[in-house]
Length: 119
Image (cartoon, rainbow, N blue to C red; front, side, top):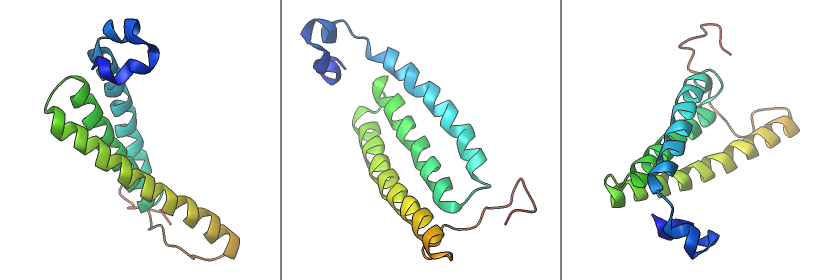
């Protein structure tokens, strides 16, 4: 794990315990999991962004703890790529839909699981 913090210098990198970062990633995973539940009632683009953020933090947490290091690293990397593509689409949809006053790029309706009167 020390190779991942080499930016801070060799002396700091040698004294880093990567598992500490794993606990930070675990905290963010808990946060994004309940945000995923909240995003169910917004639109499908945001829901999928949060689902992939969950996978990102699962991968980062596992990798920081040294669990299935290669698989978890790839899971995090692919998740981040998908998140960025979805975020570009979602931001374009928000701007263009508002600009044109109609659904130029669809974002998907809320699932309506928790709020039955969702639009």
